[in-house]
Image (cartoon, rainbow, N blue to C red; front, side, top):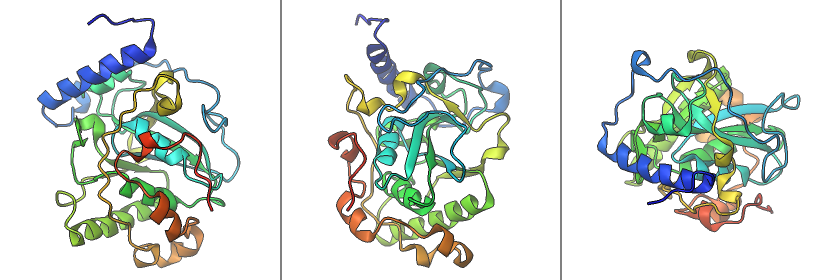
Length: 284
């Protein structure tokens, strides 16, 4: 098949097809640090502003805003689902590669499984308008976190589920919500057993935990000519009420801003991100 190398969308689609074929054939085992690709010092160039939200793609961020990094399958759909959360709390999102060894990897390198990275989303949010618990609820409910090295049709270490924390409060919320969601999945007979989501400190990694992906991947599903692809497998199981699992000393600070009614109407469903508008959800 002829590929127009001047067309980034066509190149990206061809790479995605090759990536899935290669990933399905290789072992789903993490590369060691010693065998990971060397990467480069040059930082990936991305647009100055978010394609949908129109806010900056890179910091410094406004005072009081927080950052979280997660991975739950192909980053195209993961990013769109998060930027659509309502209330103006999501300030900026970006896709990239996280949790690996290779600095500033390319898409091709991440697809090879030889960087240690997983496709990830960086979220910058205003905690006065949206809670980390709201983001975590979307994270857990938007995929099947029991699938190990992959999500749906996308297989390989670069699709593993992960949460990276920047402080101890994030760690506590990640770990306690994981335990609660695992129990909920088992009670409903969903998933494939124990949750396999990787939870690690951002400080565990040399340099940065998150590296920006190429500009054509940023807000990909909102751009003209985008391929409407999403292989996430939501299990249609709700994260239990935060009072049941959030540490008591964190409940007031991190109480969710989005009500149960929002999730009933707009909670993650199979293929929801490719069937929904690009703009943030209006609620109520």
